[in-house]
Image (tube, rainbow, N blue to C red; front, side):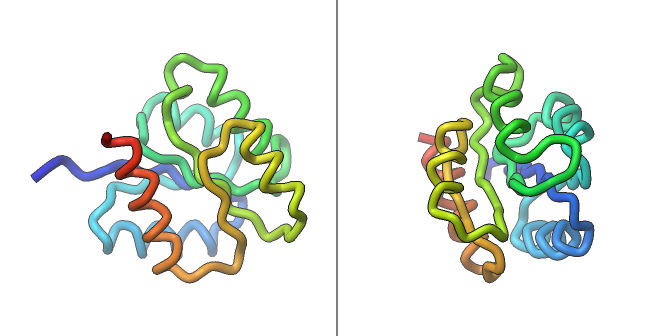
Length: 127
């Protein structure tokens, strides 16, 4: 059996990160949570997650900026990013891919849908 996959959740809404964290830990993942963009960038370097779940609309730096910084840093450039957003604009999908994101999921989403997307991304990385 392989080691647990590590997931970093960066979202400025603690109630959302707590739900996601509890669900993913229950599903067998190691999960760290950050509720600010700058802290999320630092944790990405030290925690070395296998996947980052990243909110788009956050204060200080939005998810696009965070993703672009992650993709420019040799330590974090290969970590897949799954964007989480409450926005409905079709532009967000395009912008998230331009910033280096791998997938895009719209809030509200079911935990089961999120888990399926997490599995898809982690399986594609493992190949």
